[in-house]
Image 1 (cartoon, protein in one colour):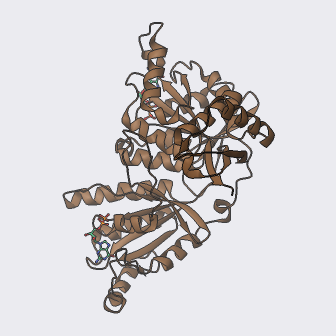
Image 2 (cartoon, protein in one colour):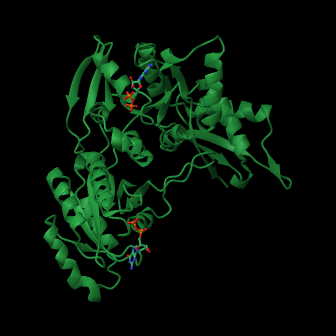
Length: 438
Ligand code: GDP
Ligand code: GDP
């Protein structure tokens, strides 16, 4: 499913973060239990009525001089234009209309992206409404008065936002072709990898327009089978300046990961795995995507017979929250193991949508319980009644028990390991819900 992406753009201090927090509510995407992964408020999953979308805040830098403000706003606006389906352009009724607003409005207008113009800090409609009309002069439509701080006008603004969602964005995708996102920090070799894949003689390439985003998906045929690589145009186009900012590489990753079945996280072997890699990995993890860690530039590493082992251990340590991820050592430059990469994509796709019958699951559960007694507390022991798989992508299981307070994380992990022993599920996370049955 492809969730629409909505971006907030605006000058510093107009209230972007405040509005972001109001819209995100408790849904700020954070990676829990993940050491070293900070809680960035860059993106969040928002639910409004029956609509679900990903909200991104393109701001977050505090420029000092006016010149810098304008150039950074242009960058922000460009990011929003590249990645979002709808843009909320936030202005400030108290500061009034300023020159930078007009320049950004021009950019947004030329992009032909749907824009909702919101005028913030209208805490009192009677008092400030007359000042709102001035913003008609931006020429990007009707200004909507809102107050992030007082939570006024938010519903009307969101109505205007979701009105721009197209039926395709809201529907389940029927497309059966595997969708793959290549993500990673700047300079790890993402563009080199995609270019290599496109350059291989055995590949047939065609660009698929058809998303409202400027991102152009690319179909690659490998051994007769089609694969869709997401946002590869953005990668090929190169956007170094923007990518240098960590925030922007995260925004890029979020919007690509959202639409993917499998995520290839590219890591630079010459540098080793870093915290920023962990942050980007966390995005794919919390969205339950299939994951392959591609350790690139393997050609440039001096190797002994222990090198692969050492790298694998280090990655498992830093990315401990995704021990299920596949790891592959590649070179985008020489093409080393790229055929293996496609094999792995196939396996991960299969695992990501694998279904296990309730009968077999319960055999595994019964055996697991016999081998290791479930935990107990104050004389009451956890009883497991049965387990069933309720969905795929990622595989999701419900375990029915007598008292869910008694289910420890460690025991759940034990059951997960038993399921993995039986079915592998390499490359995909598994989700568990514990329900009580009286
Ligand atoms: P950002 O730089 O655009 O992210 O702006 P912030 O969200 O950090 O807000 C900047 C300042 O404006 C803060 O002091 C907020 O408290 C204030 N602010 C934000 N929204 C409102 C609002 O709706 N009304 C008023 N009066 N102040 C607001
Ligand atoms: P991106 O920012 O992630 O798209 O990274 P690029 O594809 O632009 O690559 C960054 C740098 O790493 C460039 O100088 C590439 O030539 C180099 N590079 C990429 N892949 C490899 C590789 O497999 N081996 C070596 N030795 N260098 C590579």
